[in-house]
Length: 315
Ligand code: NDP
Image (cartoon, rainbow, N blue to C red; front, top):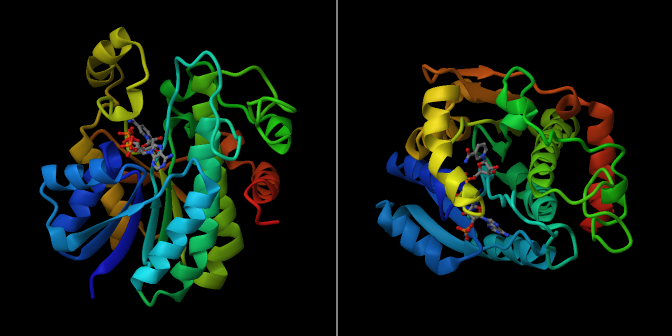
């Protein structure tokens, strides 16, 4: 049978390119888990994904209720779940004030981390039940976890501190809207959320890999400077960022190439190791990258897990 993969945020950028790369092989059915149904349908058609190889299902990660509804809808579809890809994200670098999810969490961490945290926890049962030989759960990370690159060290740097803002509910009312309890900074909130993604992947690995055989992985696909992720940035930035990445940092990758990389992490038998943060060299060969000190702090990962469980109603 075909493999069955859920990709969140498959309506644009990396998620769409990955959906296309997988669907084209004819070996995968892609469930595009998207907040905008029409946009996702149009996107799938525009890149030519064959109709029989995808299904669009509604998921808004900025609402815990929507996450739970998505899981119900998916289960009712009767499809197995072989691979889960947590890819969707928002990035709000120019926001002066925080905005919030339906449950009152700051939007970047609420969407990128907490929405995916609940989703992956609920879908673990479905992954466990799959009879697919290589079951995987992938959470897209970012360069902010790399200590071995310049770009990973550009301020404002990620810092979760002692998680006091997160423990307080991240609501900007009784507590700070930032995980570390500091002043709101949209670029930092995004980087913090990506560190959470990488810590969550490792904690899932420690808790569930041996027992379930599921492989957990994260990755930095390269800088895909033209995706919608930078839509909120100032126009000058959007103009200069792609050539800067192409010619100066040489970290630039096309959406198509990045999609192939994530598709490898989904399906390539040689990338099945669990607990790994994958990256690619300039010649596009994959390697196991090292994570920054904070992104590999197992004590912080455990604490993040416990606080996040409370916030999403699992504890
Ligand atoms: P895009 O903005 O193109 O894609 C993000 C996707 O997430 C969109 O499909 C968007 O939906 C979706 N999304 C946003 N909010 C929600 C929500 N509340 N519920 C459901 N879906 C949502 O960005 P990229 O393709 O660049 O980003 C994909 C991943 O790659 C992210 O995890 C990002 O952190 C990571 N990444 C990107 C890099 C880059 O250079 N671009 C570098 C490293 C990592 P909609 O289409 O409706 O807006």
